[in-house]
Image (cartoon, rainbow, N blue to C red; front, top):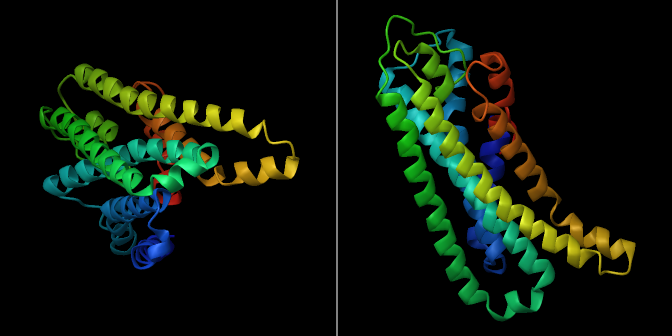
Amino acid sequence: MYMVTVLGNLGLIMIIALNSHLHTPMDFFLFNLSFIYLCYSYVFTPKMLNNFLSKMDIISYMGCKTQLYFFHFFIITECYLLTPMAYDCYVAICKSLFIMLSCPYTLGVCSTLMLVSYLMAFSDVMVHTECILRLTFCDANNINHYFCDVFPLLKLSCTGSHINELVIFIVVGINIIVPSFTIFVSYGLILTNIFHISSIKGRSKTFSTCYPHIIAVSLLFGSYTFMYLKPSSAGSMDERSLFSVYTNVLP
């Protein structure tokens, strides 16, 4: 799965970069999405594979913080990147003439939206990291997960973690509510326009362009909600680990 992830996303990046016909807004977003998948699969999968082979499931404290930081940076970036992709689907389906006439300006707007996604991820991930840095860890050092994540590390803390959980709940809530609201509005407008198409074949063909994006959004936001919007007391860490497997599947 890791080899497929690396070769598939790296191949997509190269194809989009080298083919001038693929320099459209949607291809620009796909380029960045493949880059994000490539990076965040590299954050923990090689270490996990190494642990499988060496039977030494050990990570340094600095390595754990680095893994936590970059994992959340790329996952939050993906949340905000899927939002303009939904809007781009709406423009491509409902305003196709507009997107062809204003392509240079649209690409400029896309670059700005991409920059905003990275900045939002940077600011939010600093909150996650600060929450972990303020904790005091005692004797326990067994992380009940296959990578360093927020709640498994909170379980190891010998100081109170209620404030940390509240901050995480607020940050993750914003990261889910804001993008998902925009995505739902975009798809609501898309469905409204699709229903105006008279032929059933035309409706199916038009909506089929959105299927991959809908699947990605459902998997990401569904798993993200289950993993981080539940109190640490609700559900076991094994359940959270199971739902976090999407991090290997989705790329």
